[in-house]
Image 1: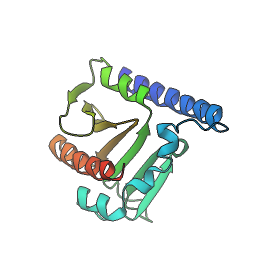
Image 2 (image 1 turned 180 degrees about the vertical axis):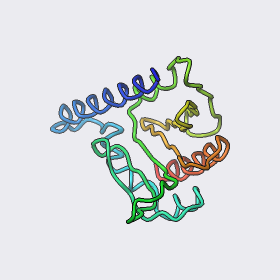
Image 3 (image 1 turned 90 degrees about the vertical axis):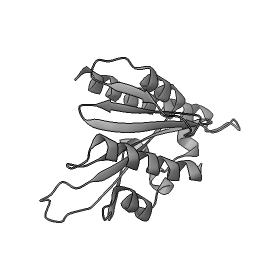
Image 4 (image 1 turned 60 degrees about the vertical axis):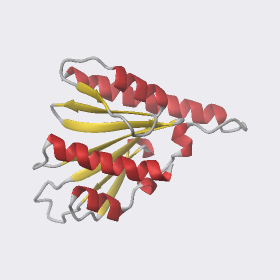
Length: 168
């Protein structure tokens, strides 16, 4: 369970760092940070792309984490079933590196070749996620669902990462 706290702390630190960086550069002509350059994670994937990747009808997207995360799912008006979801979270490079280098007994990091400049799967008790770095940008994509196997999640995450990379 320790890895959840580490990951949550990294996301909080990344959010704070991005906010500080945005505030400090908002009046300057310097280069935009990754969080500014990719301000809307929902714009990086379409409903059709997500739906085809996770083989599920997608009709809802929710922005969270201060605008850094977009989650796609099926909105059930009766709230009776937990459906498959896909989530895209924008990261700064420091958070990407910290996640890649994390050493914890509950999380396995596996490098992935030929995807962006650097990529890795992170697998733990809560499932898998795929984190990718390309240039000054980084993101994590995860696919969750009650019937998903690790192989299915990784395959769908790689498909979605490919769509995001095509837009960078």
